[in-house]
Length: 272
Figure 1 (spheres, one colour):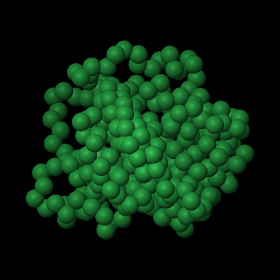
Figure 2 (cartoon, one colour; figure 1 turned 120 degrees about the horizontal axis):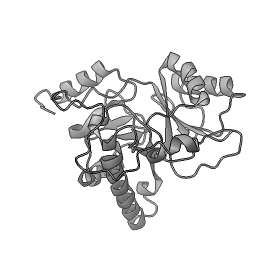
Figure 3 (cartoon, one colour; figure 1 turned 45 degrees about the vertical axis):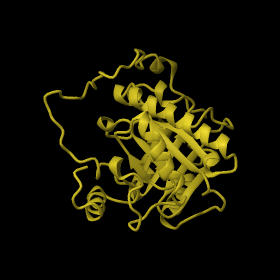
């Protein structure tokens, strides 16, 4: 089974050029938002990326498949969240899309194939990965950066997300060229579908750390990468400070109230 956005739906995606004055159709221009950025990442114990056959910039406004819905019903019981991602053309076996999962206890897990026939088995493996810890060795040395570029869902994600994506690609390529054996060479840059909070675009998900950043601009990319390169490659815990406090939305494994409490305990006088 190949995961693909149907051509008919693909034609519905937003095709106009995005500008800095784009406005979401769901945005009320008369409502002033005063909410803090921290404490806005959705609570999740594990984040599971389905490898899509097209980048999120090509998705229709809302993308759902029977395979994704079936798996979501199983993993949501223990705190798993499903989304579609793009790290380049998938290496499909023809039997179904691959998955990349991250959890607070297990770090990163690669699942080579998902289909209706192995759904129960995959769901069980994902739960064990999230609740018991690592199921495989040698998979924790990569850093995955996912930018929301789902422009048909909200133009801000297409515009600012796309700009931040390009800045990340350029900066990581530069760093990897300067130090081919350094950690920059192990950074994977991907795109992800709607993550919630398009008003915080550009949104960046950093795994296995589990850090969510928002309100990013291309000029923020060097400092974000510097912090990532200077951080241990593992899921973050309550002992770790936010990786970039000024853009911190929250962290995997924390409820929204816990995210806010952690931030306020570390930065009691912050107005972020």
